[in-house]
Length: 264
Image 1 (cartoon, rainbow, N blue to C red):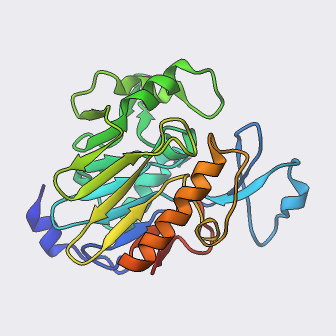
Image 2: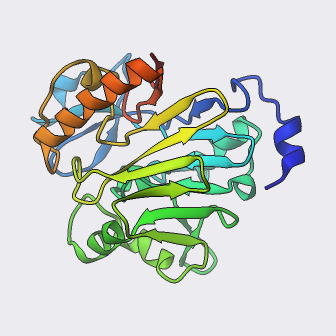
């Protein structure tokens, strides 16, 4: 890790070391086909989208600690002028892809793992987007993603990860990364979904991925039909809220249009 970069890092739109920044890829509606259709909040109407469509934001997060530059999930993998939208957003915060040191993936649904690789137009093959980062992935989630014929996954994008040296395949249900990051498999939103706690010098940052995708789901009891175990997801959210209130956690909400970050 480049300690000089962390020490000298400044960005007008970033709170600073130990803070999290959302990297919004925009608003979308998604229905049972698992297709993410861009949604303009000033012009579009959800009622005009297919029955069952839900409105979501898609926003990975970047956190700079005194040890790492961490990326939490990787978005849809959409391009702007032939370049990953995610990379544009990182560069707006003065961060280059080579400077990311850790990529933490909650699960491998295409809206969360779409930017972990990109297609090299010269070779036609997928390559890893963040070559210097250690990627932390649940091994059982990967196996499920590449073997399951599901519209939720883009297995072609994921296959190149299998034999890479900078992947840590997590096989335990819970554990610790470098002494300051906790992870736990929940099996709530998806069968092998995991969540993360990042302990900085003065706060606990909680990232629940799709187990806790929006602020309102933390506040209210909701059993979502699209979850693998909706009742468990609801119960976990209530537990996290209670503990988060006591310990003043900072919550990151991947799919929240209005409130991507909330601190109790």
